[in-house]
Length: 429
Image 1 (cartoon, rainbow, N blue to C red):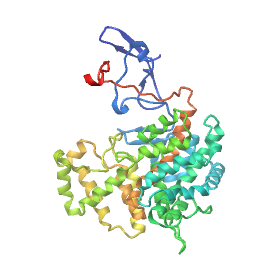
Image 2: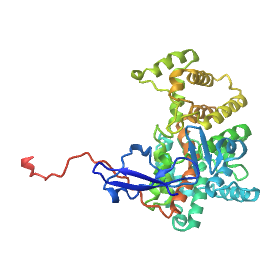
Image 3: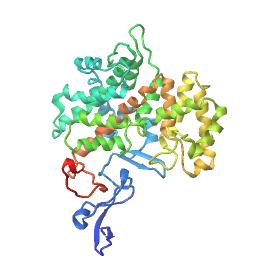
Image 4: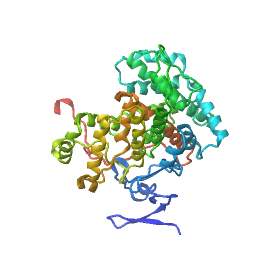
């Protein structure tokens, strides 16, 4: 039996709308005919109760602390797969077999180089420019260098653009970092894995050999997996909205990077690390917690709670384990920041004030500490996030392009400005 939702307006009219069900998760009321039938809009700031699209890529149950990529729990993917396997899954809907993985890895590996003229593009930025500003400019400029993959109506063009973005993003991020510190660019090395290659491009110098540390590579690879997609968040919605106009994929991903740059989105791990550094010592945690409870103090507990998760963020548990592995490998387990993080976590998980408000640690709480231990500066944290999220953005963009119900995005508004009025001559105003 088809489900229906009934809306009764104040003028006595009754409107009916279909109720659509997904494979899991809440049903949605299809209100596309609302304005046509009733002459009214819905009002939903932030789109907290609005499904903007139908998608089969990622599912989140915030109350249960569940995150699925194409149906697979994030815990299993982060434990049993590498990042490129997850990329294949997000793009194609299934995990690759051995032959498919080899072909996918080979294609990505041979797209990692960037156009030589793009190297000189970096020179137009000041050395002290924020790396995310550089990223927005350089990624947006890719459409000026790769004209042969801009026809969004051509599936082959979309595929090539996807490979290029996934493959070149680590190279661009590493180049942005090297440029900011005045070191020469390090070119990709095809014999290395995706993540090992990125670490080498970040940290190698011509004066000495770079030695790959498998524990650190795996840690960063896990960060990439945990950040690969997260349903219809702000930056993903930005990519979809940009793409709905028919913009090319490079421009859409640049728009996503710009949105991610916001401190309420991709900058959260940076804010969490800065909070820990501001506390300074375990002995001051109690004092900080007291201030965090006082709304008038202006002090916020960063890295706890989430817009979607009302339970422990499943990514946070994995990141916590990764944090231990990295600090053990580097002999940093007595790191004061990590000790401070554990003390803060313990109090927050036991204190009724935070428990009742479901302010559990999220992935940003630990990822900043891990990246700091890997030698990644704070200014690069959001760039790493953008690198990881690129595959999710592309998967979501590609799904939108292929959706027969896709339309150019056009949110409505509740207008509260002046009513119609006439312009007066300047001497009568």
